[in-house]
Amino acid sequence: MPDVPFLDLKAQIQPIRDEIWRELELVVDRTAFASGPAAAAFEEDFAAYSGVRECVALNSGTSALHVAMRCLDIGPGDEVITVSMSFVATAWPILYLGARPVFVDIDPERFTLDPSRLEAALTPRTRAIVPVHLYGQCADMDPILELAKERGIPVIEDAAQAAGAKYKGRRAGSMGTIGCFSFYPGKNLGAWGEGGAITTDSLEIAERARRLRDHGQSQKHLHDEVGYNYRMDGLQGAVLRVKLRYLDEWNDRRRQVARLYDSILQTAPIRTPKACPDGEHIYHLYVIRSREREALREGLQERGIQTGLHYPKPIHTQEPFVALACRPGDLPVSEALGRQCLSLPIFPELSEVQIRRVAEALGATT
Ligand SMILES: *Cc1c(COP(=O)(O)O)cnc(C)c1O
Image (cartoon, rainbow, N blue to C red; front, side, top):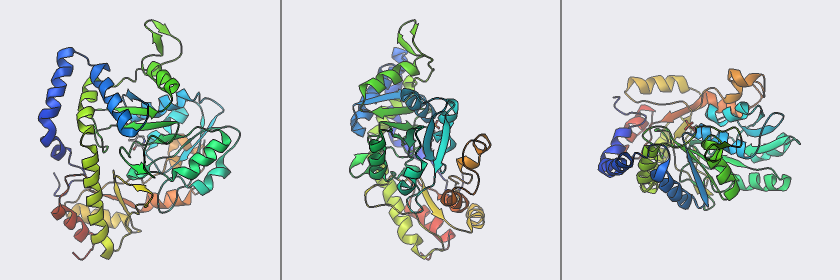
């Protein structure tokens, strides 16, 4: 392992290993491997945590976005507005459904959908707006929600990187029509395998999502519409339910790590990320910017410090999207961030010594 790993999942497992193991045994004893009581109990807890009426547990964040768009009947001829500076999965379901992605540039400080550019992207074919709470900070939701409401367009929050984050007191995933989460192991609430969920206040949407994840069955042997096998694995439900109890504590610790980076990196020749005062950033990622990104990354690597890139090639420049949406050069803020972004190690158990080593390697005087 490098001296400072980008992510150390083992450090998180050790203190809660026995607690999780007991819950896994219950799932095994009941042989409730697909959905079942553990996944249902997680749904209940995650809905309460998020401040919504319903949570539907699924098998990935990508399926969550897919199911969310199916629940809104998005299909061929429709347009879905989102951002290009995200993980590619934000936009995959738009293509799965034969709809057209319309990418809006991001705010240069917040890195999320720029509300001032939203209106110009709306057309009579716009069927959904999908802001992404990138790196763990919520998009500036109020102006987005206001415009969406005015035009009668539903909002799907991609909260895959923002479990537990807040915006003006509201949790990520509770503000739009539907919230989408990923519990991929590397996310800040990670399963011991794949997982995802949607959150919503609409009982109708939740019911439809429950049918869609289970082959479109309204009752046994009755498949009313095209469905999927998108159920959450029972073992993942058990893991996530235990881990949810620690989420706030872990997110607090991530914020402390970020505060320390912020203060030590003041003297380094890079730009630190900005946390807006209207919410609670949970720092799924701590992303600095530099025009010398590649040289910095190599220098850190030589010192045993692992880094990541989120995301060096924005979605609209990826092959399956180029013919459909805007072209390279059309989203200057997203593309500049793609060239300059560098994700530093961050996880709740990262030590002060490790943080100082990273900062020193970046040229901070510590
Ligand atoms: C991880 C991620 C997804 C996809 O989640 P999976 O569980 O990997 O399918 C979608 N959107 C964003 C912003 C993500 O970070």
